[in-house]
Amino acid sequence: MTEPSLQEVQRWMKSRIHPSPVTLSPARGEGGGEGNVELNPQAGDPGAERLSVYSGGYLARMAEALEETYPAVRHVAGAGSFRALTRDYAAAHPSHSYNLSRAGRRLPEFLPTYPLTAELPFLPDLARLEWQVVESFHAFDRPATGFSQLAAIPAQHWEKIRIVFQPSVSRLSSAWPVLDIWEARNRPIQEVRIDLVNRPQKILVFRHGHQTSCELLDDRQDAVLAALMAGRTLGELSDPMTADPAAGSEHLLGAWFARWGSHALIAGFDLFHAEA
Image 1 (spheres, rainbow, N blue to C red):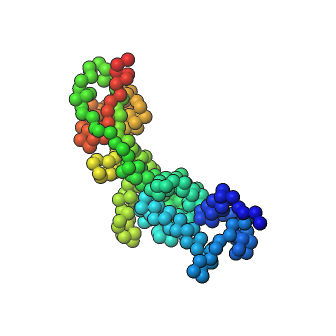
Image 2: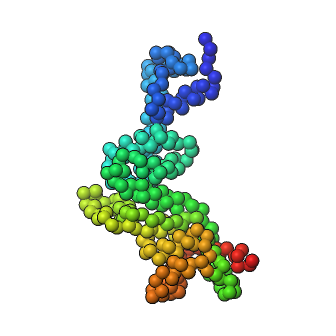
Image 3: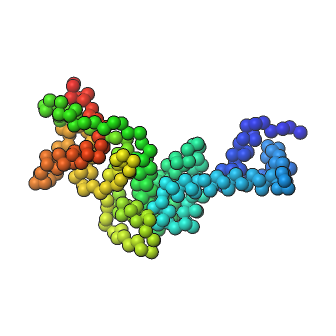
């Protein structure tokens, strides 16, 4: 009898633990099987039954990880639908990381074609918001810069400066009121009444200290943040800032900078272009 190699045993074990649409033959010793892998019974329990503990445990850990990462998705989907979503997602994207907090990172891209999204079309954006909250919480931020650094730059170079935001800062633009839905995640579902029609939301996600927050943005602040996060200089903000000249562009920009600074959202200023 040829004994299976270690690699064959490992592959077979992985195929049994990870959910898969492929039907596998049972192991030798319990009805014959692929790779001649034999499962020994212990204390009267068949080997296949003992192995099922690992398979069930994998799905249980995945469910716990996704519930912790996506509480709002679970809340609106319901426990039963979320269990099915967890099973289908785990089959499509088995975890290859030792860190279960990363297990759900691909759920936002999985949801657009998932059947439940036809009933709840905001789910992909809601999942994207929840993943950005997780990413913000775990990000390694730099020491916040002081505005004295900006003041030290000659005024004629300001238009060439690029703003560097903390890694914990991100933004999301959605056609749905996903911030309202996210904020209702701890309320009884029968009490949640949110108008979904024609209510797009633009959201700033950031961490201040140990607290991750989400705030609504108006169109102009979102346009400015999108430009700055894309690497545009202060001088290149003329388009979003002159969209409504009557709104007091300089006053608005100053107020936004003061708020971003008070929350330590700015990590520094890129002076490369200012020195060129």
